[in-house]
Image (cartoon, rainbow, N blue to C red):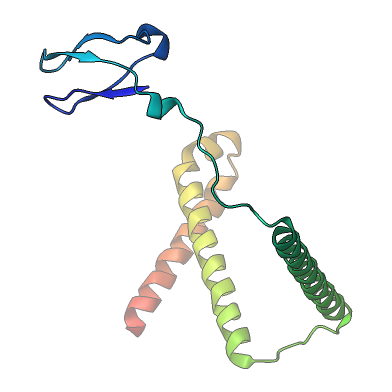
Length: 162
């Protein structure tokens, strides 16, 4: 049960078995106020309903709710069936091929950009590992020298164009 201190209105939860029927003195743990407390008989009474519930009314409301739930389930099932049919129709449709030149052009430049970046990465990797590669494959030195000279010429050509 919950007991409230009459002095500071602090609430305490106390077990019912600690307070006898004739009552006892209690002390507030917050303000140290001392008072006599007795369990009121009003608190122990069982609450009773003053109105009777008409079971027929409850039964009809229950049946109406069941009917609404059944109708909603049916409508949801219909929606699911329609979605499944649309999915099946999409699966069996011929794929539409778009010959949009803008889209193809942007794809071409994307692939070209990836190829150029990959080629530059390969050149940097070969340049980094040039010395160990030449130690393993001595005839590779002339090929790598010619490759780097060609790349320098391409760089100078692009600079001259700008």
